[in-house]
Structure formats: structure tokens, C-alpha cells
Image 1 (spheres, rainbow, N blue to C red):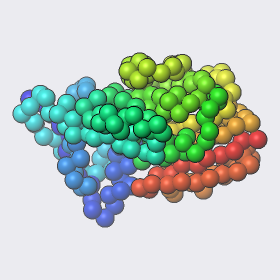
Image 2: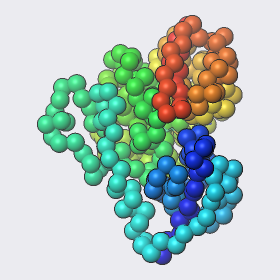
Image 3: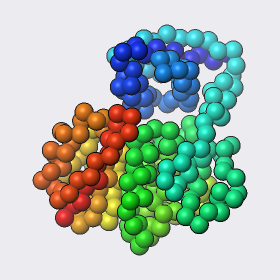
Amino acid sequence: MAEALVLRFRADRTPEMRDLAAATLLDFSTSAIHEISDEEWRVFLRDPAEQARAAEALRSWCDVTTLSVDDEDWARRSQQDLKAVTVGRVIVAPPWDLPRSDHLDRDDGHTIVIEPSMGFGTAHHATTRLCLRALQQIDLGGKLVLDVGTGSGVLAIAAAVLGAARVVAVDNDPDALAAARENVQRNGVSVELLLVDLRQAMLERADVVVANLTGALLQRSAAILSALARGGVLIVSGLLDEEVPAVREVFAPHSSHVAHDHESGWSSLTLTIP
Ligand code: SAH
């Protein structure tokens, strides 16, 4: 018997509330989110002791009830519904939905295998896709890339397969870093992984910095992130469309050019840092 949280979103406010609920779930050890419909999600937590706290935090965005599910294997099976996602020349695939080999052999295409349930970043979230898109608009050949908040490692692995000379990836969550390490090995690429907090570490400057965090953290970290990307490009995402003006404003003194992209209520900015 497994216990799921049932989240019901009000139809008139769903897109934003869903995103906020997803962001809230990042603070908990979520093992599976099953999207029954736009209005209803079922969420499994890896640690049942966290359930009451998660339910309380989620109540700001939706109605929360619990449901006993008569199947221990439910979470794993619901994950298996996840399919590969294609973003430009990159396919992000779970191990059970690898593209056919003729697809894999395309000269310009790259397949990355990411085990869902391990760290945020399967490309099923718009912000990951925005970053993957932005990375492909830059020639990464010979570049040093820094991935801040690597989660599953997806962006770091993408940078490596897209030709970066060196990739450094950091996260302050040990579970995310362990997931990233496994995914890096699985993909046979070279990524230097560091367990550090962006705001406390002395990180090396990079040619391209990608940071898929939150609007609030980006605003607090604008000076650090801009210094890390000095003379290069900084891609930031994880911000809601309505947070764009505030985030642009804090980065304005540090950047000479800004390109804005967005998908499903989420935004990314690609900043040129002189
Ligand atoms: N890069 C992945 C994951 C983004 S989720 C993707 O694009 O899909 C954001 C990640 O940032 C989480 O794994 C979280 O643990 C990490 N993070 C949050 N605050 C951080 C901080 N202050 N320093 C380092 N990593 C941080």
C-alpha cells in the first residue's frame, strides 16, 4: 500500500499554480508526479514522513487530499509513462524510451539518457527545454561551460555532447549531485561535479554559464553569476514570465545584450556579459 497526495488545481488559475506546486515539490524528496489531468496530480514522496509538511506547503496553490494506492510499484510504473523529449538537435530520453538506432546515428543529433526520479531535469519541464534551446544557439566548441544547479546533470551533459571543451556542474543538494554523477557516467561524458552552494563557493569563471534556478535566487545572485560569466554568455531560467522585468533589471548593469525566450509561462534570458 502506498500513500499518494492528490493535488486538485482550480481551473481558472491552473498554469501558474501548477508551476508553483512543482517548484514547491523541489523542496521535498518527490519520487513521482503523475499528471492525471491539468486539474489533478498524484504525487508520491520518497520519504512518507515528509508528507504532512509537503501537503501543508502545497495548500497555498491547490487543494490537497491523500489517497491509498494498492500498488507498491505505482510510482515506478507512472515514471515509465515518461517519454523522450526532443529539443532542437538534442533528445533527452529515459532508459526505456531510447530513440531507434537510425535516429541515434543522425550526424547532427545527440541523445542524452537521463534516469527520471533522480534529480530535477528530465526536459519535461519548460525551463530545462528553454536552457537546452539557448545552449544550442551558442557555438560551444572549445568553451568552458559552468552549469549552476545541475540537478539530474541534463544541461551539463548536453553541453558536453554539444562540443564544450570542459564542463563544470555544481549543485548544493547531495542527492542531485549523486544523480548527476550517475547520469554523467551513463552518458560516457566528462563533467566535473562539485557539491557547493553557488552563493558560498569560489567558482572558476566560464565562457558560458547556465543557471536554471528560480526568479528570486537569480535576483539575489545576479552579481555572482555575472562575475562567473565575465566576457562570456550567461543563460538564466527558472523564472516565471512575470518575473522577467525584475530579473532583467538586476542584470542590466552587468550585461550588454539580452535575448528573451519563453514557453508555457516560463522564461529564459541569454545575457551577454562584457
Ligand atoms: N539544471 C537542471 C536542474 C534545475 S533545478 C535543469 O535545468 O533541469 C535547480 C537545481 O538547482 C536543483 O537541483 C537545486 O538543488 C539547485 N540549487 C538550488 N539552489 C542552489 C544553490 N544556492 N547553489 C547550488 N545549487 C542550487
